[in-house]
Image (cartoon, rainbow, N blue to C red):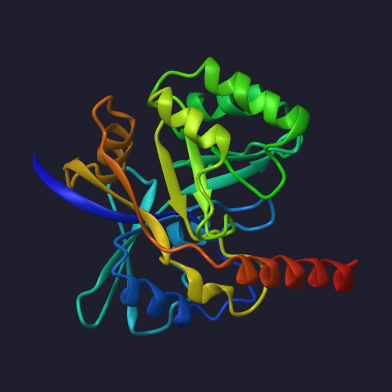
Length: 257
């Protein structure tokens, strides 16, 4: 079994409004090797990939990989990107939880602890995703309680480009790190055109004991290992850019209401 350094964006959304040729260009320009999906209740791209369908165009080919929880894309130049299954669930407490490396049918609105248990039961890695304003007040107390009761490797904390560059880690992120819980990072693109260019911009680098016959299992074991060395890489957005993105998202919601 070989040691392999993986560069991954661990929080990726795909939406119908995206130009997927731009998604591929973003992957190549950022040298990302793996994308971890965080699909919402209304998107099922990974299941389309498993059925042999993909939106990247003729220059990109799809290959199923052993284990079933990832697919491998490659272009004519030999550039490869592993896309790993994952689903984002909004819990009863309005926290964002991501089921990494699995694609379970877990509905939104269930209590956070039930969602975490369901992800473990499905064989996935549960991640509590930081989001603007969602780790404060009573919800912050819930997050702190979950961090208190979680062992390293059993729960991850998510950082995204929506946390402005230059800002220190959130208080609960620092607390999670002191408790030995790993922080994963991702681009977290939003559902409007142009956001697809952010894929791969922010992520992590980690070393995996790599088994090509079980790539996702290799990733799971490496991320959950007690000696995992996970480094955040890339860049987050400026505070002005974050404001513009969130404002655009709000305007989009108003138009669709």
